[in-house]
Image 1 (cartoon, rainbow, N blue to C red):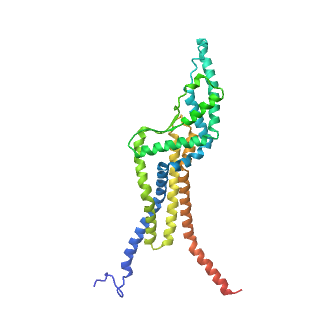
Image 2 (image 1 turned 120 degrees about the vertical axis):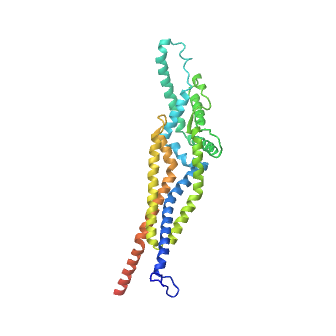
Length: 328
């Protein structure tokens, strides 16, 4: 027998035979724990995206508080006022005015009418009926979005403010603005584009990936974490590393969300209110950010308990036994 051959005692494996298997299990367990730590925040993001894209009630509940947001109200007031003023015609009022004086009077009348319309629109937007109108237009828009993502069309997704315009025209007529210049405002003329037609196929592809990821990533993360903890021998050290890894991955996702938000707001056209868009983005990503920080805190807490829990408990027991042995 060769001197390098493994020696068996009573049919049992020697330490030389066990060490490669233990090393292999440790490596496999470490890889699984690393994959689980990375997949956990990604599964959270996929689940959030799937809920916001497919569940209309969840989406409406998320954006409902924005009806009372000052920046959003200001943006809606500006959009509706601009939509109404686009159909204001002063030609009939200026016929009797000399042609040379018409530009100055037109500017004066336009400014006065706009101030009046703006005031009436703000009364509607800050009134008690606006939250229901806000939820209604968002429910319609989300159903259109859901249909665009599941179908094969390329129609744009818009936020139709027709109910707000109708309420404003009723308010104007009731407040003495019964002039013909405001009777020409159409029923539908104020829309906010949420998703352009050319962008629909790209968003549809993202939706398919998110839908699949929301189904596969959470169980995959759970299996990786559970399998890794079963394979490793030093579970206390593994818990510390896994907790810190999950916390770090969640923190990186939070940083990525902040960077994406900043880049997206900077890329908006000048006509879109950035405070309103920021409030909208914060409302949509609020549940995701909360979940991310919960994962980060849970990971850090797990690592802290694994690092300090068992030795501390043993030290306390030893102190109690020592005090009991010393007597009163």
